[in-house]
Amino acid sequence: MAKQGSLATESTAEDRVESKITPIVIFSCVLAATGGLMFGYEVAISGGVTAMPGFLKKFYPDVYASTQKQNTNSNYCKYNNQSLQLFTSLLYLAALVATFFASYTTKRLGRKKTMLIAGVFFIVGTVLNAAFNHLAMVIFGRILLGCGIGFGNQVVPLFLSEIAPTRIRGGLNILFQLNATIGILLASLVNYGAAKIKGEWGWRLSLGLAGVPALMLTLGSLIVVDTPNSLIQRGKLDEGRSVLKKIRGTENIETEFAEIVEASRAAEEIKHPFRNLLKRKNRPPLVIAIAMQVFQQFTGINAIFFYAPILFASMGFGNNASLYAAVITGAVNVLATIVSIFLVDKVGRRMLLLEAGIQMFLSQIVVAIVLALKVKDHSNNLSYGLSILVVVMVCTFVSAFAWSWGPIGWLIPSETFPLEARSAGQSVTVCVNMLCCFVIGQVFLLMLCSFKYAIFLFFSAWVLVMSLFVLFLIPETKNVPIEEMTERVWKKHWFWKRFMDDHYEGNGVK
Image 1 (cartoon, helix red, strand yellow):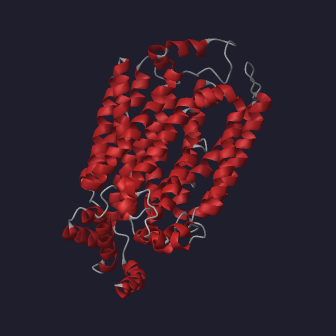
Image 2: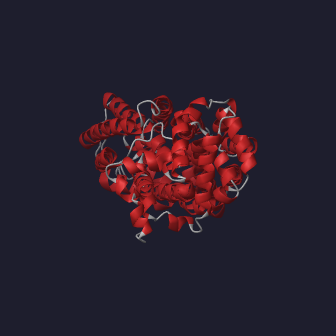
Image 3: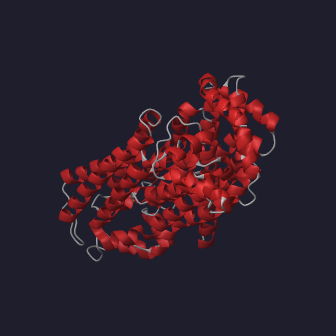
């Protein structure tokens, strides 16, 4: 048995070199990644909508009145309202709960059908949000959209990692994040145009156009093939073999097929997947997955994208100017994510994370200093030149995030869990991400009001901590086949290798 395993390992490289980058893989990945488009659109659209006078006047008259008063509120506290923040953050609370149901459907129904479920949630939620006139409809629509995000963020990164050839897995997986950044940019552009529309039609248009990416994901889920890993895990070996040949563009797939079958057999022995996650051997990917989601959100990035228009308005930009600045940062986000697609499989995950840490830290310090000196509670001395500097520094921060923590925060968890723990592991990943999104979304405006300029110092301290975590504890996974992570990554890492000792498991140490 040992000899067979050795031969399989030796032939793996040769087989994988022969696998081609086929049109069906690219097509399937592009369609599946529209789940990221929906996620990004929903992340960014809320901030613009909650800054629109028509929306505030109808649903949050107290906040609207506060924004109209002169010199009675701190520049940092105009929009501080827990009910208003709940409009944004409720989305992520629903996603947090939904991801546990998505874990079940991902494993039992497959990746393809789970994407379809996400698309249906998105469509119904969008219709309710665009048409609502009462608070109950607001809440129900946001809950359904949150369910769509929970299901979509659970399944899409898994789908992309499993269907992609090893040598471009990182680049294809980042299509999810690229689509998320495009969604953010589109939301900023829509908000910029919709803000010019008088009355209710502006914010209704902003929320209603989410139906476009929702429809794309739904139709895409009907077209794509399911992954060989999912098919084999559900006992469809012949179909799995056929799909593997099709997506790899070669008949010589026996080594990869055998690896997936073996991983599937191990997965079937697991009766309690979430309890299995706590086993000693699964702790390294679990700890890293959880840490990366916490760190990703505590860079401060979603605070910027949730509330970019409000944030820039608080800094002294006019309403239209603040939306315009948000569009600029959205465009930078897209371009920098494209950079990561080309670099992640060349320079590796660690290098991008470490470089970005330095860039994000310095840019946030500069913004904090400018705001501390020029933007006070009831006065604003931010000159045109300093306003440009703030936007440039925010763009510097966004670009660093977009080629590092944005895509790699999803990539590493989706590629490092063994098959038997992959669905449950991804569920925990999404759950922690959504929990952090909820916390940041709910408390950011309160923190902005309380911390003022120091909010950027708070996030820069987190960036320093996460960079040290990367330096010492995150291994390089570039060009490692997804089913060989244990042997080639965890067992060779200076710290995590101690958790791979079979002796502990065999003696009942969990």
